[in-house]
Length: 337
Image (cartoon, rainbow, N blue to C red; front, side, top):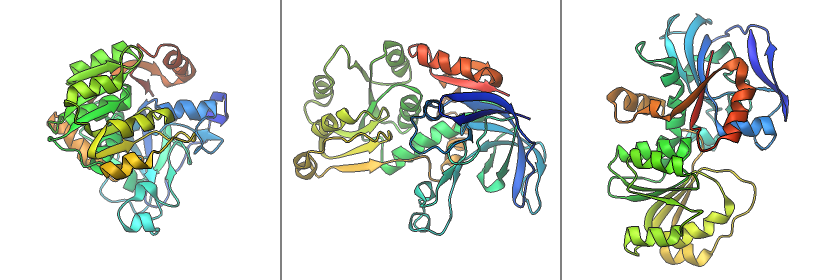
């Protein structure tokens, strides 16, 4: 079979690999569609501090079951599935309190283990979630990005009574916006790309701010009447923005962080203590696939609106170069297998 193989940073090829065989409790999945994530780009460029090499990348993917390993129940050959890339030990402290997404022994398909940018992959069936046969595989591959939104909104206890500022109008910012709007949350979105901000307005953002042209703090002051923002979610991960978030947050405000830059941010303790702010990290998803699949089924979000381009998986290098060179044109790029 063919797979997208990153032997080391800056080395990407389509390589012939042995066909995997499903073991106990596993299924062989024929991959049909996969979304390119920023973390895939970072693994290729050597800027993802969590990745292990060599690696078959890809953690946003869907397909159909080709065969079943011993002991598998509840699945049949031909079932369409979306894949949760999070694996956990089940015994550490984080797992014991229901947070396997930050397991001490966490491994993610496409980052720590071989992932889904291959024609076939053998996976534990506990990571597979059935999707309707009427769905496209492309739609199935979009479940994972929406679980990122579901997780951070759950972590920060977002509600329809909130005002929410989303930093970043790329794919993750857009899925957070759609997920928050389904709650009735009033949203503002900030970015430096006008095309993305226009898309955010179409998705229901009340206010958009191009931070290259306008002061974010002034714009948010007008939006909140100077009262501060109850909820800020950072989908860009620029360390220098953190002090700005502390200033803009309202008393009893919450800040959700999704980026994982290793560079330090300045923390003004006075701002945190005097306002009694809550700061939440959010990583991957905590068993959010069933919830997001229900969103897709009831039509409360429109995942296909994310997709801007499609490529055959053999042209992944061309796709990545296009993503890098055309940030104003690109949202989610889907690889077709």
